[in-house]
Length: 82
Image (cartoon, rainbow, N blue to C red; front, side, top):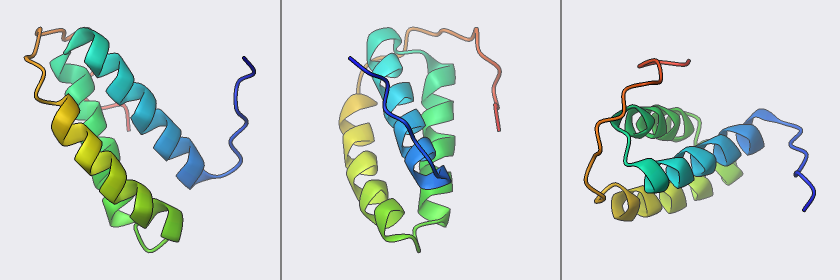
């Protein structure tokens, strides 16, 4: 499967948020949860872009479902990457 090519910031942030959510589902790592929440806040702040407005709602709903997974306590990643 070919890696998708992203050419602008909204696409990159949406893809990164989806990847972080997927990794959180696998690990239940609190640090990943913080990173997802940072990305969701960034998307929400920039929701004047139509793609980000749609993604903000969709990803926020997905995160509610995903984040119900109990945390395993992984703190290997830095608290803030941004």
